[in-house]
Image (cartoon, rainbow, N blue to C red; front, side, top):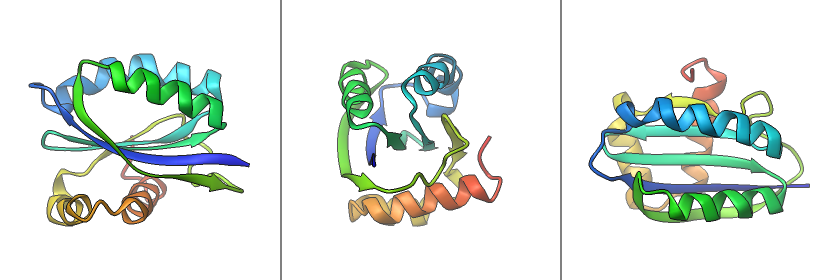
Length: 130
């Protein structure tokens, strides 16, 4: 059994596209070490991240994310257990949501964690992720 969570946050003064390389350089190896998979989506100044892994690993990552000065307004939209991973082959997929902004904004306004999980997982599987 693993935990799955999705959160949203707002970038602090830096467009997510600019901030992503340093985030991925530190996060990909850490996620692999912690047996965490998932995807990081970005659009304008908004981050949306799906994380899957052992509950203790997700607790550790949430503590790190809450202290990360690159973003603010971190809101966990959904957290729960699952029998299987949606993104077993991605320690962290990168998903540009900019072209889907109206759909993403609708999901964010509704705090629709399930809708955002489905969107990120689908885009990663369709090859939109890098």
